[in-house]
Length: 284
Image (cartoon, rainbow, N blue to C red; front, side, top):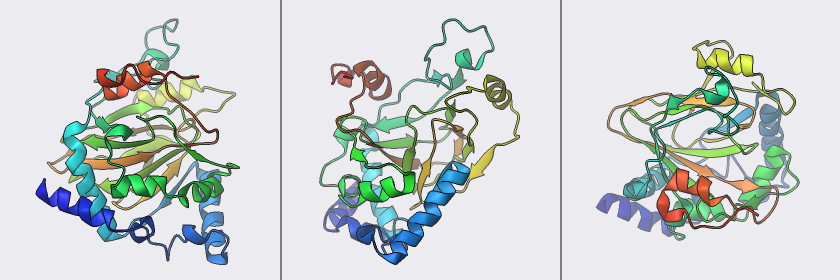
């Protein structure tokens, strides 16, 4: 804990630009030719593949510092539900047994809610950096992005200990933005099937094949500490395989939205972060 606290003190003395490899990802000068080239390449990957990776987004030193911050917050993480469907129980009542909507799988991860992340920490200051939303908007094609207004969901730390994993699932947000801080000793691979469903076609047959163990179309995405990733989680079925070893898998999940003031329903937050948040803001 003392080492983690020391890392937090160091990261607080750094600006967000000190944490990012600005030479490789010049998001602080977005109109410059080098930035435009980087944005064009990454945006093209996201359009073509449904995901793009930014390896080495954090410097090596910054990744270690922010991982230590996350480790210090790990005791505050909430374990959450032990099993779930790919759709997080939405609209499952009228489907027959074996349908993907009512197929339950085990889940073992904990999350630190945004209100527990110190505002002076490197993680929070990187999330709140004014240069970040325009850069991400340029990658995703959004006209403008805003920080998430929900006090619990804005910035999360996903923590997996030994045996941790996440079930096959879709996300409710169109684009998910993650930042790997620490990899486990073994396992913990991010697997996805990009574009498996669309707004016009749920493709339940394709989803069921993956849930039944088919590997066709499954992509294992390399994901090293310091890597930022954007992916179309609403359309891509994805999971995290079981981790092995004592070193935790630590991922920061950063939420931005095209409309300001977005809040989550208290019931959703309570399921993710525990009873303490059940009386939070109501979705308007």
